[in-house]
Image (cartoon, rainbow, N blue to C red; front, side, top):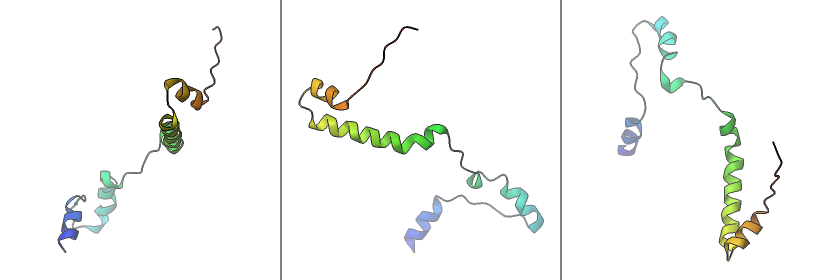
Length: 81
């Protein structure tokens, strides 16, 4: 029972109005019910984490900076603007 009380302590608490017709308006203004906004960066985050894991694996296998850079298989295009 104690664990349940601890979990609830971090939850948002709201007091509902006595008039049930006012509840929808109240809920429209409670931040806990806001819709999540996903940015383009958020949608790419999993791929970025996977790429980072891959780089870390290459780093751990590398015995030198040269090995690390070669293991990344970077491709660089340089052109005049």
